[in-house]
Length: 119
Image (tube, rainbow, N blue to C red; front, side, top):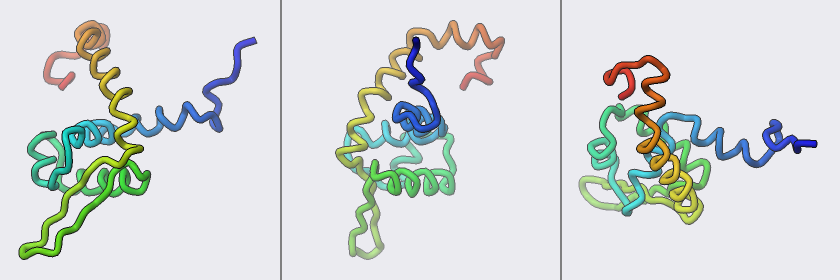
């Protein structure tokens, strides 16, 4: 009998749900090399609006994967960094990136997408 490993209450679903949001993994990976300000993140990521970045950072902060650091300076400065829990996701994100690099062309071809649609 095959165990019901992907039922709604299964812990494995947590990771799938987390990475199902388009920007979560991208933002986490963009923070891999250390703390960054929101503008630096937008530049590094590309294609993400300030609003969506803010929403994503707040969501990841709520998941305890990212921490926000506010500096009392003029002008005010804010940085975001991975928590230890957030760092623990870098391995799976990197593995998915390796899979995408190896099989991405075949995946895109199977979908019938052109390069612009595939991103």
